[in-house]
Image (cartoon, helix red, strand yellow):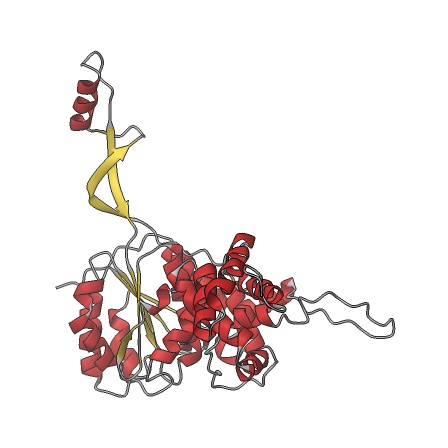
Length: 398
């Protein structure tokens, strides 16, 4: 084979592989394809490891893209069984209470095997009735109010797409420090004198200052017990969206033990991030020990991730079977360690809900806000609430 030429249909396959990566979200331009075609005859055709290393060096520009690239490489070049599993993700499924495990990236599956929706529409026979497959306004409105627990797999995926349209933002809080401001306000004498010194004191350019504002940190504590798994999966996507939007977000989940997921949710791809979370959590859809988990958080993490300005989102149904006194004590500690404690409980979807369970009665006196979290509409209301300054906390009378 002459130097610089690729054997067989390798060039065509590499270009198609680059299109798959581009459809899955990686930024792979024509220059990267040309670079790969030049590098493969030199060092990438001796074995599988060399082939993978050359394509990875040419197509991956950030570390967080490596997982998606590895999955695409495995599906495209090697294992037909995994390809079948990815095709199975695109098929409709019977709705069950237990969500199927998500190990592969569904967005990658769409890129490798585009659905019939994305294919060019064929002219339908005149005698047949064509069904509308896209989400109409009424379908979106119905999906906004649909319960996460009762959604089918297709509805859940559509809800995840609608979730990305939310624009979460935390209301900034004033600090004791001040910063330079272009608007007239408090006169900054020191800055004014420095500016006058730079021009020789011929005139006095006034400088002003304003109160510095910072975005408070946000901590998510999500219950992943059997009754909360479907809601918690959606809340992990919501926490990933919050983290990508800018606020400093720490995410923990708990069933029978406390697990920190913040490093895993830094992955830009939400499907990959949530799949890594579910794979690394050992007690997903198991039992629940709320008091024990809150004790671990208060003892090990509260001083590290909380502060006087932090907001805590506690996602749980409050169905605790341990001692209610311990749970009330840990909730009081958590409440005193943050600025705002918001309890998100899916049981509030029932109009006749009453706090009769011991765990709920023990937790309720120590929260600042009690909200439902069972559909997209409730998450949109939560986004609006987080964007507003928190109300002043009531000081208990002595």
